[in-house]
Length: 397
Image 1: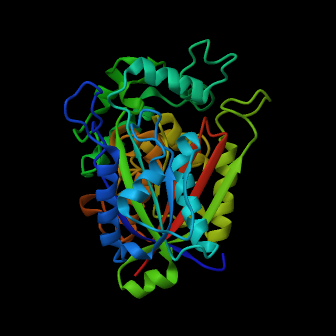
Image 2: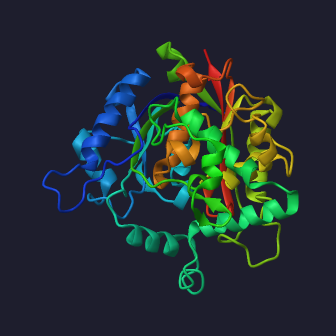
């Protein structure tokens, strides 16, 4: 990259229940949340609103009341831009794509300051409506949807295969949930902060065998805003920031589980995306100080940690069980609490990953601060890791 992009400001609401039901007298309006977050993020960044020339929004969920949300919010902000103003969509990768495209706006010279932002509202929608939408989004409508194949079922198959191939135990997978809940207990943005034990994890009711209640993500609402800038702008402000050192993307040409025989738990797209990001950054996995993963279930965190090279193949579950991926361990993973405890407002989930990296790399993570954190990695997912988008960020003084 001839220029470098810096992450200089963030703002987010705690993940949880924010959406109001249609029959409630007083309604929560999405644009009221987002205008406040934009103001807070711009103030955190130390720039002026007029400096913003591009905004990349995550596509709102279909349950969001205000349509054409990006254009509507621009009117609320009274913000005129010469760069791009758009919404992007990529299922679970949506927020990572928003971040990536905001980087492009700066690298292409369309803006010196750009925002990646979005809101995800779904908590007041019935479980049946939400699940039908999820199945139609993630599955094949000719086969998977009609069979009632849910997104969690994909990951349950991954878990079963992993346990069969590598001898991993239910307790080792459950250790990921315990570790994430501990991290979440230290994060004011997390949806669930009460500590849980391994015994509680393995004794919970099954969702899809072998995954239980604490192995899967909760539903929740979330919203976040990131301020990105050219490194020249970032350096002129005189505040700590994080620079994007490397980016990598790969799509393997399948949708969810491939109809071409392959290794379903290798997550080859994540492997290749990580290889590209490391190459651009000039580092290896061993150089990372922490990783913030898009991992909807405990098994996904295990498989992604192996695919990006921070754990050896077949050793990710054991590493979690032995404390290697916990704060204070060899390589802390999901210090925010991860999707199982911090929460998973799907279309903005990765924005929270970047918020966490920004806090860690600017030394603002409080009790969950990784000592001396300099290099961090974030991942985004599309489907059952048929595609992956990875960013490596570095702390700058």
